[in-house]
Length: 313
Image: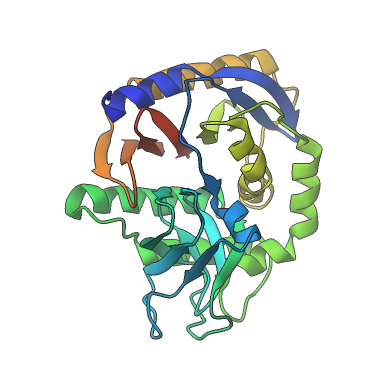
């Protein structure tokens, strides 16, 4: 079996641009790869839709930075960092991507995105949205620091709460429980309209999003089916920042060929970085990349990268 770092390097270099489009000063680049056969699995939302997984507090009293996932299916389960889960004692987001064994029970690291509630509204969690790119950047940066200093997937909870408060302010809404979900719900129509104008990225295994000449977000998966299931939520999270928090959108026509070239160059640069490697939650290894303006993470299982995500400033 190859080193996980070599698997990630090949994965990043293997991507090709399959579609480029511009919407309101934002460039969306559909990317695809074919790096071999990855293990079979269900996505987290697929298992939730089919009632094959339960997500709950770790105990009756609960613990803010942890939740329990009970995978009752005969398939392995892919969880993707930044996904929101709603309900139980307070809404959370997943701190890391994870690959869970079939018929298993796993305590997963999470961050709270609903500071003002600590009481049950349901016994288990339901799926929500996905964290905006700016919140993901803050959360992932702090998790990377925790992994390198204390081998922990714990985030800086105050940094996440501060970002959540900024999201609510940017959306022009107040929330009785300081809940990120209220920011999304307040601006749902604008978010849906923006994502709807992008349309399908059929055949893509991932996407990069550029504002001007900067890549602000990139999410890559091992197969088109996984990206297809997650595309709308991924782009909604990016759209939140673009529409409500980004005040320097470029004016004028976007050079799509140049955007394609910049994306490929950016991936090539990432492939040359030296990531740190950490045991994953569940199966596989978790690799971390970090530069002054970027934080990235990858879930590597065997010879496959199941998920790579990067956020830039």
